[in-house]
Length: 147
Ligand SMILES: Cc1cc2nc3c(=O)[nH]c(=O)nc-3n(C[C@H](O)[C@H](O)[C@H](O)COP(=O)(O)O)c2cc1C
Image (tube, rainbow, N blue to C red):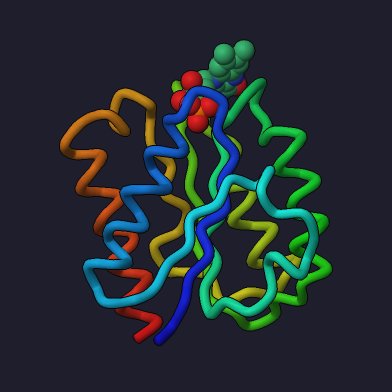
């Protein structure tokens, strides 16, 4: 069975909520998924071995978090060339983080990124039914492409 790693950073749990909803969508489509905070992943060995990667981070000060920047250096060591992927994040107004991560996965890691682009939701949307559905749909679409 195809296996996905969702790795996220989250200070006030909005992006963590998105991670869990996306995972639900993937599981509902019959694929395996592990959801981990980036703080639980020590090195590239904790990243290798999955078929699909979905990285999530909120936007603070028009940027991704410092922890996510360090995590992406670890991910670079894991050689993710050609692996399928997506990116997501919660924000309030500008939302730079998810597109920046998506672009890094696409252009630096040379991953096969979803045509859907990054899932970039406002935090108001994250806690709504619409947000739950958008995250589940993103997870389902990733799993369907994987299958
Ligand atoms: C100090 C601070 C700076 C922020 N800067 C931005 C920003 O530049 N752009 C933006 O869209 N949201 C910004 N936000 C809002 C957060 O992205 C938003 O609260 C998000 O939902 C937090 O996600 P989390 O719960 O996963 O940590 C900022 C929030 C704080 C507290």
